[in-house]
Structures are given as structure tokens and as C-alpha cells.
Image (tube, rainbow, N blue to C red):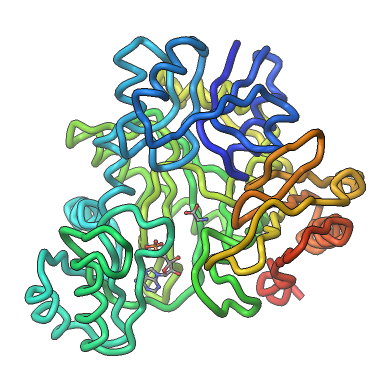
Length: 425
Ligand code: AMP
Ligand code: GLY
């Protein structure tokens, strides 16, 4: 079978790596792909914002399965367009992806289906925000309604600042594009968990839970990023808590979407805060997380293509996923300056030595290949991923591999998974 993977980040490299392990797969095409994916697949340059170009590519390649990595093409309706042309594609339709593409829609959906989530108000003007914040206690969370690549959430220490931040979202001065509505939300304290599930529109199969490190700096300081590292262990959630999240969050969400006539097939990423009053949904994403996918997929023993096919064909209930026991971690090496401005084009050295460390997979996130040499080409450059019997061992392997790698301005957090390590000691 030929598989087409849309995207160019670490998540898509991990997907391509997992797909390549399937005996069913004869050929992998990545669009646009990156320097790492180019070593295991054929990469075709494309602008994923150009839906017509993506459709043309899929029609000419006729893949047996298309996997959509990032949210942007989902928001444009790539799944709907490919399906209309008789192509098999893994991912939610444009209507189902609204769980990610409109935070206002997601919050109202959560409320309709009694799924636990922080108190909120959806506001269409600064005047509505000024009125709504009166009943919230600072800090107050202000969220852009639409996709914002991790930049749409502002934690405000006062009502006044919340109104100002919302004003910046409405005018477009904060994100570039003007928002039509914003979400005001109660601030919650607790541990964040990324709880990802596969769904075929009816059935739900959870993937292993993981924990992301969103802030750029060690000790969870500095601005939010797409994710600087993630780990997954067997003890991250106990069986009782996982079951509770499945029954009270993931399954009602999938049932709710089916009941509203917009069934959700694909990966439902539940971004949860585990609070004193139980797990609460902070956000939904309609795709694999990045770098969550890297840490999760290195622990998957089952054939990924079989599982994704089962989602596309509505037979997920017949499929069980097998996982490697133990732990995994993905540490992101980023360009100096990220998530702000950064330079690219620097040669990356040490990759072959790093790949020799047992249990390590190096996933490329922002790289290109020029005459056999990997060059930096993005904010997040590499996801150094390791699996082992314990988190401590996995971290040891990932950081040993990281020590072999070099590029100008290279930065990574040295404390990924450390909070969990302390709790188990
Ligand atoms: P989101 O894109 O909604 O997941 O928000 C990005 C990040 O902002 C989350 O991963 C949290 O760290 C933080 N955040 C979002 N909503 C809340 C909330 N209600 N309370 C506390 N932190 C939040
Ligand atoms: N790592 C967070 C995300 O993929 O949204």
C-alpha cells in the first residue's frame, strides 16, 4: 500500500517512521516532509494552505491511505475534499475538527454534553468581555476562538488586563488576524495530561497518556511553545483515573459528536488539567500532539496502519493496541530564540552518533537535507526520543544522544520529566 502523510514536523516524521514499520506499506510519500522524512520517504513540496494543490497531489498519487498531521489542512476541509474523491483518509471532517478550530464551539459542546471543563463565557465584543469578567476571579484566562499555533491563550492577572487582552484579540493587534469571538475562562491549578484517543466515529481507543512541557524555559518558565518535550510512563495515570477519563470525557465527546450529526473519526486529543475536583478539559485538538506523537508512537507495538485503517473503516472496536511497558521521552532541540525570532540554515552534526544510542529515535521537526547534510529549518529542529524500561533510563538515553548533537544556537530543556522522576523517588 502507498501511504501519503501531510505535514512537515516531528509528529509527521514519527508517523512516517511508525508507518514504515508496517509490512503492508510499500511506499510512503510525505508532503511537504522534512530532512528526516526524506531519508525514509519520497517528499513532495507543497503548501498545505493550498487545499486545491493538496487535492491534486492526492488525486495523482492515489494513496491507499492519507494521514493528516497538522490542524491547518483539517480546518480547510482536506478530509471532506479527499473523501468526496473516493480517497481513504485518516482525520476528522472540517465540521468535526471544530472541536479544535473553534474554542467557543468546543466549550459550548462540552457544556451541552456535561463534560467537565472550567467555567467560561463566550464573548463577541469587548463590552461583553467587560461584563463577563465581573464574575470571574483573577487570574483570568482569555483565549482566541480560532487556531493560534499555541499563542492564543493569555493568562491575565486582573480583570482590567483580561479586558485589554480580549481587545487585542478582537482588533487583531495580538495575533495578526482579528477574532470574531473570544473565550473567557476560569484559571485552574493542577497537573496537565495529554490524553489522546483514536476514534472511528463511534468507538474510542485510548493511546498512552503523556505529559507535555509547553514553556520554553526550565522549571516551566518563559513563553508558551508548541511543546519542548514530553514523556509517557505507565504510572502517569492509574487505571481508575484512565477509565474515568474515558467514560466521562472521551466517550461522551465522541457520542456527542455522532449525536449532533458530525461524527469525529481520527485522533481526539483531550488536553486535561487534573485538579482537586477531578480532570477538566482545557482544550480539544483534532490530531496527534507534537511532540506527544513521538513519545507515544515509540511505545506502540501494534501496526499503526492497521489501527488507522480500522478508524477509517469504522471497525476500531475489533482492534486492540499493544504497547511496550516502561517509559519514553522526547526532548526537543530548538533554534536559539524560539518561540520568538530565530535563524535557520545551520548544519547539524552528530546525528549518526546520537542514533547509535540504544532505544533512541531521532525525529526531525524543522530540518532540510542539502547534499546529504541536515540543516536547521525551523523553530523546533529535532525531537530526540528514547524508550526504556523506566523513565530514568529513557531520560538517560535521550540526553546521552542529545549530547552528541550540535548546531549553532541549539537549545533544549534539561528538566524534561524531572517532576515525575522526583515523585517516584
Ligand atoms: P490551550 O491551548 O487551551 O490548551 O492552552 C494552552 C495552555 O494554557 C495550556 O496547556 C495550559 O498550560 C494553559 N491553560 C489553558 N487554559 C487554562 C486554564 N483554564 N487554567 C490554567 N491554565 C490554562
Ligand atoms: N504539544 C501540544 C500540541 O500538540 O498541541
